[in-house]
Amino acid sequence: MRVLLIGSGGREHALAWKMSKSSILEKLFIAPGNAGTAQLGTNVDLQPNDFKAIKDFVLENEIGMVVVGPEDPLVNGIVDFFEGDEFLKGVGIVGPNKEAAQLEGSKDFAKEFMKRHNIPTAKYQTFTKDTLKEGQAFLESLKPPYVLKADGLAAGKGVLILDSLKEAKKELKNMLSDAKFGEASSRVVIEEFLDGIELSCFVITDGDAYKKLPEAKDYKRIGEGDTGLNTGGMGAISPVPFANPTFLDKIENQVIIPTIKGLKSDGITYKGFIFFGLINVKNEPYVIEYNCRMGDPETEVVIPRLKSDLLDLFEGVATGTLSERDVVFDDRSAATVMMVSGGYPESYEKGKKIEGLNKVDESIVFHAGTVADGPVIKTAGGRVLAATSYGKDLESALKKSYESLAKISFDKAVYRSDIGHDVL
Ligand code: AMP
Ligand code: GLY
Image (cartoon, rainbow, N blue to C red; front, side, top):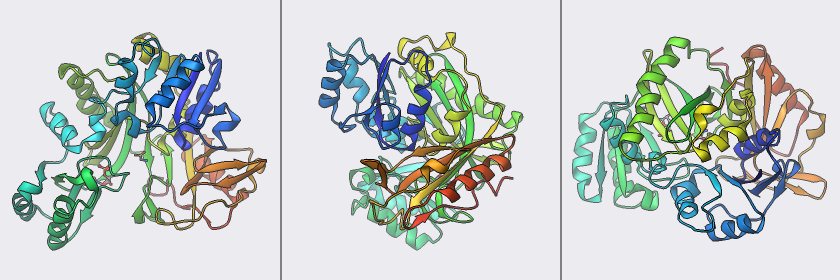
């Protein structure tokens, strides 16, 4: 099969790495990709939201399957574009359509969905510019900290957690009346704060059957001990020690199954990955958020633990035959640590030469923000690369990832030295 993978991060390098091992892969293209994906297939200079250019490329290159990595093109309707085009009808596409992608694209849609299907989540109400006063009154009825969420996609920045009521009221006004996050904050979800420890679960579904992938825990803050600004994710581990079989069963019965059934009963055909962002509150799982794609860096730790042929599963999704395919996991633990540019998640410099990549032999190095300049690989983003290692347990996997990162360097490189420490 000839495959086009859309995206350019560590997630896409990990998906490309796994697909490149498939016995049914004929040729892999990645749009736009990075220096890591270029070692596994052909990078093509296409932007994920330029559907017309993607269509032309797919037809010219006889692509049989398109795999969409990031949320943006999904929320913007790339799947609907493919399904509605007479020339693209025969091309398999992995990802939810625009309506289904609202699970991530609109916090209010996701909360309504969970309420309708009795899926455990924080209590909430949604407000607009016209109901700002009511929103401020609702804040007064809650206990701190206050959780404010821009309804739409805001590049991971749209959630504010505030300790003071005064600050929360001010920020609500900034979001609703002063468009702090643009159109994304024209509606704001205010919800009850849940106190617990987070983890993420993933399924792949063809709209009917679903298959679970290993769970993971991601480390979102830039600083040691989970302090400082939120990032896309600084590292991840899988499995998650506190997610014992009883807790995983609760997740499946109280969250995953009601979500799959709820989508079906709402008449929404969901094909692709569902990412459940969860929190464990006194041994009960609650949904913090849905994402309509795999996580990054969760993909870098979860996909290496998948033994099955990923492209075979994608074919199952595209053809509605997922129930006939097997998902087998690797029993080993895996740990991923991200190396980022100094300054990230605020401003940072690019174009730094990365050294030592060829010295790593005990980890897989997934590229995120990298670019090849002839034989030299340079930084090209905030999150630059991720070292993933296997181990008989998390401790040994983490040790290997840290040993590998010690061999890699670039000017102003930063990584957290405490990934996994809170749960070991
Ligand atoms: P989200 O974009 O919805 O995942 O929110 C970003 C982060 O904010 C989550 O990963 C949590 O750490 C935190 N968060 C979101 N909602 C809540 C909540 N209701 N209670 C506590 N923390 C939350
Ligand atoms: N690592 C969090 C995410 O991908 O949303």
